[in-house]
Length: 77
Image (tube, rainbow, N blue to C red; front, side, top):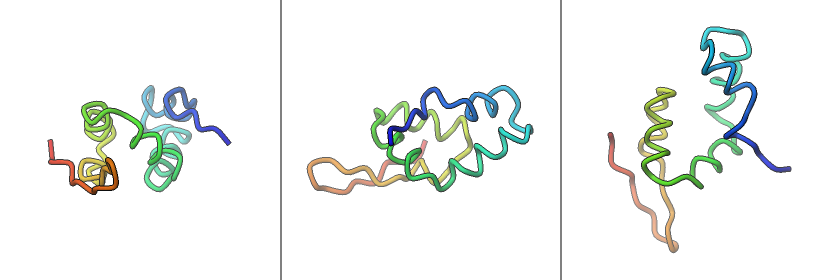
């Protein structure tokens, strides 16, 4: 199953109105969704940090980033 997190309708609902029911559902879901995490890991570092700041997801700031089998901690913003 392919993930389309960049164009997610629920994410758009959150962006338009974070307090809406669907917006709050997306925010809760994004906190543990393996597809969202995979999507974030596919993004360039700067974009990932920007999303972490935009959605107030501190845990994303220190997401473990794998490159060539090594594990690196991303510095905080």
